[in-house]
Length: 401
Image (cartoon, rainbow, N blue to C red; front, side, top):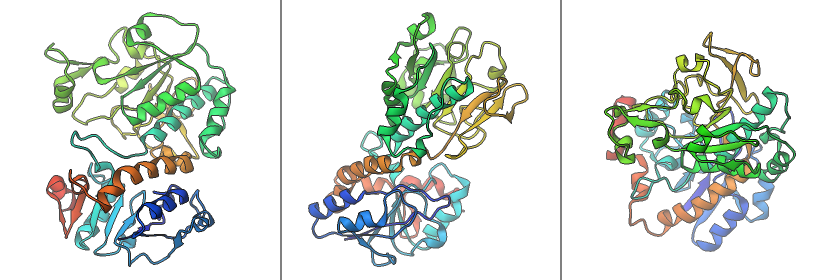
């Protein structure tokens, strides 16, 4: 097999890579019969010469490769007919902006493997950038809080060389006795918790968060059962909630509940559109709604966080949401809730994120592609092949019609 690493051509350009130069060298040593080449690129965080030094061949034309791998969507005019691709396609939720790309993939009989769909037998994802999204998203939330109240100024993550520099910056700040909520329990939430660890912030239970006062900053991690209850009064069960979220109501803004005690919300929880929203615009106008900064790492536009009406950018991270006018306003005005909703957070630490992603790709995915895939993980993640959607993704038929 010959694998080609694509240059990221979606604009704005992504600076991440599937494999670092050192990982490419390790792949060649592990699979000596495998050819591995990379398209040259001037805007990657890892430079062409770094790959050359590890003996990786730079090749502009990748039409002789059996598998082409990248990070983000490939512009439809750059797709090579009949080839096999692996990247984040952002099509499985019927995202409008990628409909034409998927139609081209079907038309040109391209096989598409989506990283987001690489799951084990229990539907748990085996690869992703979630950890770094959580780390950077929580960091940006802390940065926004410092700017809003004139407490400190953190160096933007994208201006830092890596995770070590972020840690050093957090070591120099002092937080007031604020209360922070992290929602979710996956990789993203765990990344946000890493940032709390860098700040040595104490973790408390939901009961302590709601009932105790503290002389130091604290955070709580909330899972679905912490702020949902069945409409009929029956007991919460995780399986039932995931399969029938429409039978539940959210208690996040109930009197005396979490919205009344939170200063900074770091939202990491996956949201099903059938599930109740975390809170409404009306809830945000209530005098008891205390949250003044929201780091919405999920960035579901008009989703569970109603103030997230657009994605922000790495260069312009924050905007203000005025709950009275329900309109966007100055980011750090006393009358607004500061919102961070960047949808490509791992790009702020491209070298670290690439190394972490490549490690999992090398260990968990390459053996399935090159040796054996007893569990049919690759097939389950294949959205299209031979000019058709695979059965698992047949629900996208109307999307591409």
